[in-house]
Image (cartoon, rainbow, N blue to C red; front, side):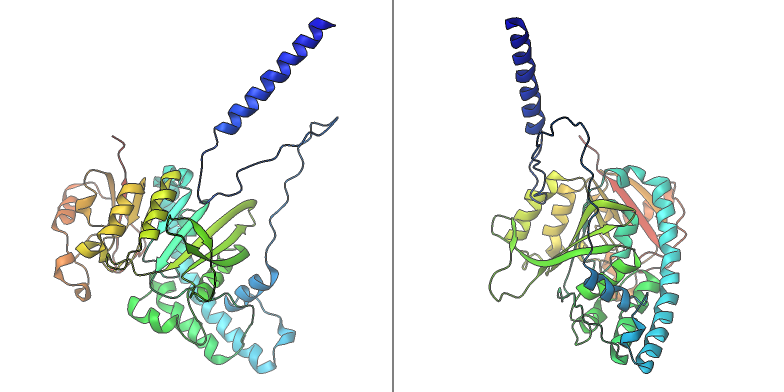
Length: 388
């Protein structure tokens, strides 16, 4: 009997140590606040309790699908309103078909050449994005976090469906170029996303989520403390950082998070709190930075802070030539796609990269069978960081 008690005691001690070691391996992650797990003893049972499916916010998603032109409650509309909505739905549907063709080609290329990035990336960093949600969710569908940033205000996710002609016109005009050419025009976004009909980026992101078959769980506004921690907003401060929790029905247990930050990333406006957030957060993740139609801003010396943060914390950069200049990526493992040509005159002659053109002329360049960014034919560059 004494021997049996000793054996049982040793077994219990060993199990306790094993559990303690396993728990000690969990890393700290500023964005992941739900990593801790309470294990309760289940007597006379070894069955794992079922994992509950995530729940959507019905009102938010109903509104998103309404503005996406996917579905509406016809009984709540007048005959005239229903006619306008159906006309709007047809126009948006035609534009989505054009965009979907490009997205399918991009998805095929990613599956062929960049599965390593898709499989390992859990954080997509996308500065100068505007409300472009379709491309990051298509290129990296299983990431845990998507961080978008632009000058445009956050706006609000409204659950009020306005079946008025001016709303339908505004959504159609603001999405027309994007859905046909893959990018938003910087000069027109101020008028498109700061109006009575569309008060910022979130209404557009929510409707694009509907087109991506994503279900919104919740949305809220956040702030960044001086030490780089995400905190709830207080007082009447104008919101600049929004968080949307969502999931995809194909993976109903995987909660994903999108952040949109309204901010000027010019060096003079670059907030120390945002810098601290990136320094604290990105090293805990496998980060891919995505850049498209970025106005060649990081070619300028006064956008060095965001450029340096990307180079320091990204395992890979996927971009067109308007992103980070090739000279900063020469020590990375670079793959080239498509055709490099002189940038549009709008952006000036100084953003033309002779070293990138030389690389295109001498290297093996892979085909790019879709438009991405300003020029058509387009170019794509995938740079993987070389660990030294």
